[in-house]
Length: 302
Image (cartoon, rainbow, N blue to C red; front, side, top):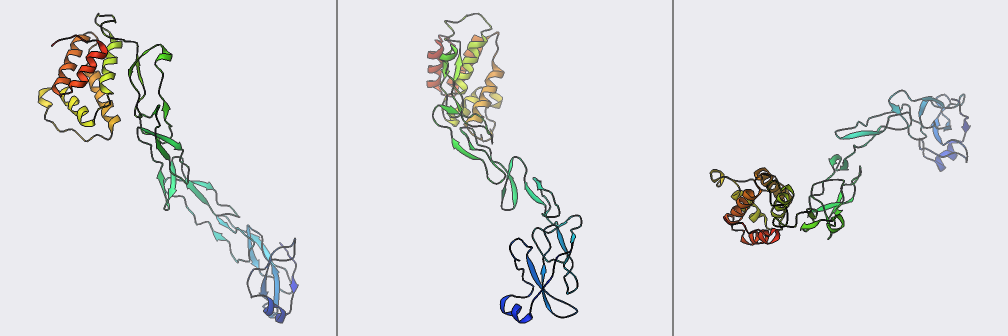
């Protein structure tokens, strides 16, 4: 590519410019730089090469600057008077993806993959909001997930980096009875079972049995008391075994729900309830036992 040459007096150049420093040209023209002609030793003002090219041959009193395109995997991002293009030296690391490919005018650029954000030169996985809290702002490639505790009337029952707190359901709107009020950790529990006495007393009453299980598993009592009940439901041989520390209340309640469901027998609902009442008594959860009897009008005796 051929660009014009302009000669200037050395004395004028010294007083106004520093050698080899980039200088903008006239409006509408390419930027320029100063260069000493090897043959005449005269200082010249040469036109720079545009982005994507480099100086193959500096200008002289005989010829203008000779610019050539950058070779593969090399670039120049700005107007320049470099004698070779820069190498694309950025490489995407772990959990990164290419945001911009290496080309003649730009170095390769990387960003964190979906689900990760940049922190201290690493891509870190977006944090999950724990049960009882929800996402306020989704994580981005440059920012972590923002969480907040679920406000009254809403809940989140699992860890998630994308889910917001959800509103509690309205049992009446579904034509159902309130079984367990909702908390920030779980939804409102609804059922069609008003009580065992007013429901079909025959074996196989799955609706009421599930309501009893939910009522016990999701009581708002301390983790220590929940653990006592869980142990009371085990066999005598396993009573003294050590239990792992729970992550949170939601984890313990789900674990207890699973255990109660294992012990239930749709064909022997009354026997299951009797065993449950015995376990509550064994764990010294007398208030919960009374509430269970009151809720389901249980007159069962053991």
